Length: 251
Image (spheres, rainbow, N blue to C red):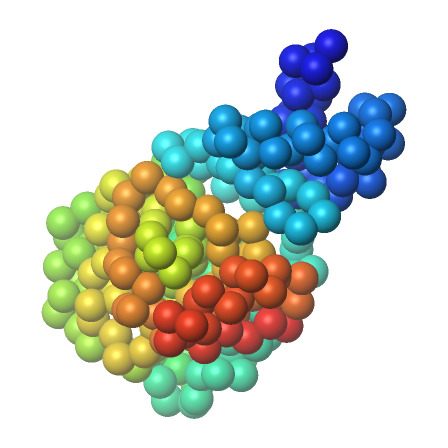
């Protein structure tokens, strides 16, 4: 019976991202005391991550949610993040814009700005192509299927040849201990090249990514200057990043 309940808890938390003890008790028809014991066991097994009052998913380090699915998740929060990032960027800046669904929202937020922008995905290129005041630079490389991220040595060479004021980097995972990580090795190399060519690094991240570690290391947390996330980011995750010297903006 407990094994069935454990599987139910794991599946529910992975689907929702995170759930409270109260929500899990209602879902499983078990007492909150029983759920707390279950969460302790599952945390020890590495099946999920415990926080005060509930649990959050531990996404597999080699497994990335498809772009089409992510594009419909937490869209309001992504738009708030994008608006905040736009306010941090001054007219005239040269900006390299990473791939991902949150960075795509940043592309929308930058369309009316007087900037030089190199987007690293074809999704963002499509958004920025008709922006009247914006100077658009296109990287070389080949598009990664689904994500349409530009990857490969030609894309890396394009980044190495330029110097940007700001890099806006999408986040697969970011923790104070493990740094910035990505699911795809080629994507990690592109993010690393963008960071290396930029004076300032702004990471855009939904709250769940601030406790996640993906497969490929991009850079240590010391390479990140600012993280923009939403107001429901956990105090614990935010404190760890600010202690490491990162400015965290919750919007």
